[in-house]
Length: 440
Image (tube, rainbow, N blue to C red; front, side):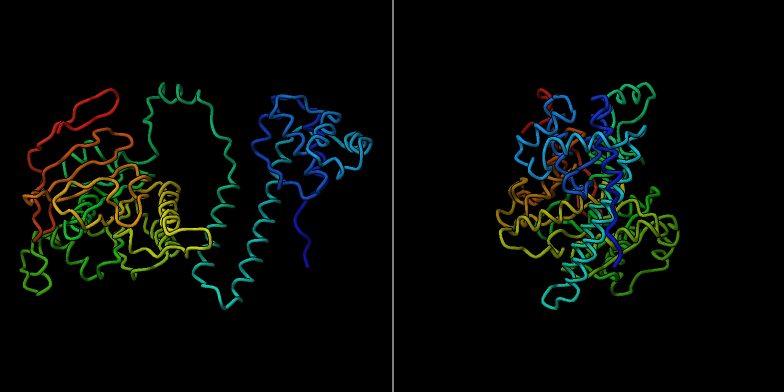
């Protein structure tokens, strides 16, 4: 059996160096190291005492460390004050303690991977457990270790001035918009961002999938590599909707095979759109862990920049454990979408079902059918609905960066070819304080 990765000599050298170092130097080291970096129990107690002293603005030296360990009730593990003084007297200081920090973090990550592998191995042999949940747990664990292992010291606020002096745009690297609505007002005031997800909500039959089709085609037309993931439609049905939008031919005509040469020519004359788009049609109930892996594969292999997912309630959620709730389970999926979108710096549009009651009533964020998280977590939330006179409208319910919250947009829906066309708007937003509101 191989030994557990560790280096107690490096642990001791780091502690000795920090005990005699300038407080300003230690202030840079403490955020980068944790208790788990120290495998020797005495070293862990000493580090905890040092960290407590530094947090209180107190000097870090052998006597103060021993006193703090007594206050914490952990002095018994160290033997006595003479042992503590001997520990520091026999240790050697190093010139670059940050190198030891990186080394100890590397050992810690290796131990975490070993622990994760052992845990997953035992789960794999337990036939009473759902292997899908084990896969999800493995991906979550690996993702956590991966993020924790990155060398990211944050940045100073002085970077704000530097960025402005350089004329930089304050946004995630990439395009100004990581998706296009094909609706002028939305493209102008609520563009699809990179690194944050967008929710499109509507009651059944209002046109969520049609709007997804429009966003997909218009984004691909403008050069974005676009992936449509639908759990409601087959690939053939999704293909028919895309062709309907491109060639302006009714979906039913395509399904019957009654389309003409002109329709074929319309589609063939859009090679850029066709080359930029892909379809995935997994089964309803597929766990988020598998969707996550599928999307990562598409991004890695095909350079996908925008993902459209239809729809939230069709995603299989982690099993609700003791002490948890279904709301927590939904929240885990939303958190996964946020993490994926941020990490890959892609655009992401999530379709969500709104409650079917009170037809004709303008929806609110409280009307999300399965969970309130798709209304709370995204950067942008847009709802579609039909009023009591069957007029179709869109409303910006949330817009983290662009304002215009409450803006209503009148739409004409040409369902035969999956198109939304904007009409003259009935509301004009007015600025009240620092928040845009729509005049009723």
